[in-house]
Length: 143
Image 1 (cartoon, helix red, strand yellow):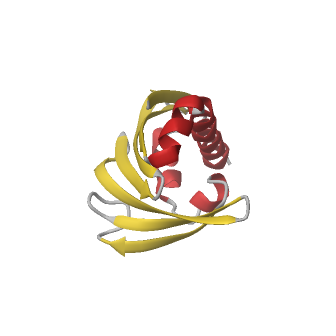
Image 2 (cartoon, one colour; image 1 turned 90 degrees about the horizontal axis):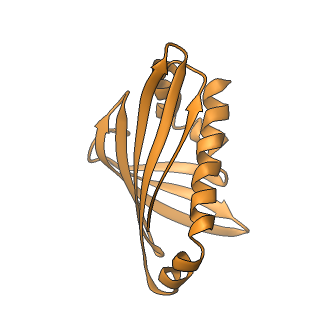
């Protein structure tokens, strides 16, 4: 499954990317995230890995994030691996004007087992969750 989403953030691209690099701040805009655990490499740089620990509906979930590309302030690409599958996200920041930045995500999911079937029927749910994170980041960045 693939999809692209975008919105605008009413802040300069320099502010937006600094806010994005704030790993502690991610807990404010990624619902359910309670811990980021570095595993290897320089956090936020190409090749680095870390675990994202989430709580969702009373269940704990752990995702392994790998930074695939890092060209901030304009682009970063990362993957998440878990028991339900693989998710690759390319996040693009584009300066629209001095105080407006366009945020675009290109998302790719490769699901396993029963999630493969559920993903086919529930693609809207995946898009809605991605947009929820984007809107949460927008609010965080505009603070």
